[in-house]
Length: 354
Ligand code: ATP
Ligand code: FE
Image (cartoon, rainbow, N blue to C red; front, side, top):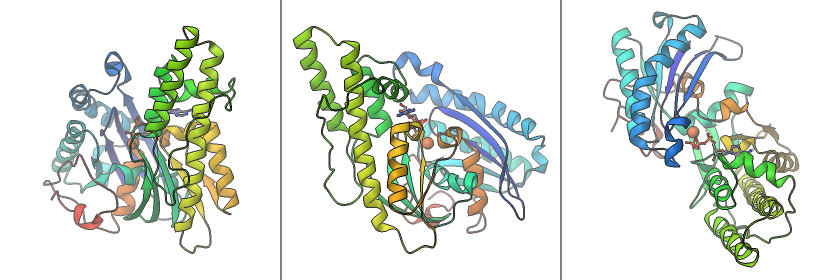
């Protein structure tokens, strides 16, 4: 089974070809990602209209490059997969229209895939992780724990009730005068900082379950910064490093504690795995804290390569390949869904657009 995947739900335009042999591990034959960072840089965030236009312009080229790199023609592809949500509606529509065109022109089956399912199934694509497993999806736009029981069976155990951690890293970096993206900037500043100088809150730390909150933490950093500026007229490099270290330590503690809580929902299984996805999973301090929790819980820790942790189309092609054995294909009525929770009425919602 060879699937062409398309992804355009946020600010990356992506196309990929994934091959699933009859036996043996899946192979990523190509994975093209065209990011739009330059287009949005001047605006301090993703501008939906600009993103949608750029996706519409770049999708064809990405598909062409993905086929060329995979040494394939469109005729040799067995099915077309596309992110049908959740995400910025204009971008999702661009992808869905492009996929429908390819499907109509070639007569190949079409599969609309939930973007979050793509992230959640990535550890199976990269590491062949067995069901059931725990997934922490932690990125610029998302933060949630999922129990993944099958390619169409996800239980959301909890998540952030306000900001995503990546968003918090980016905002805090801006507050304390570090560059963007904030994650890597804070991580490297924190290496030279004292994480005990400022006592930042660990919101919801003692509450059971997996819900998290990061916006109060961000406000606490803001207050401390204002205090320092008031007292000293500005921030020294050491202040920046200590603020970064204090903030990062709080995020680490919250994620580790909630991961420990998530294990309470793990069903009986011969093997246990904790998997991560999303750009924030690049953070070494976060990774090593999660690894410790996993080993305490006698679970293996799986972090796919970063290029497959962030938005890409290989995960969409792979999710469609797995789901194709569990459900019927979509038709040209497939519609884009800006909101699409993973664990609500999955089969019905995976139908043709209602
Ligand atoms: P989504 O995929 O949810 O739509 P996104 O495209 O913003 O959102 P990703 O590309 O997965 O998310 O990740 C980008 C985020 O990861 C940014 O917020 C960035 O600051 C954060 N990030 C990247 N590297 C690190 C790091 N080393 N530590 C912490 N955060 C990081
Ligand atoms: Fe994503």
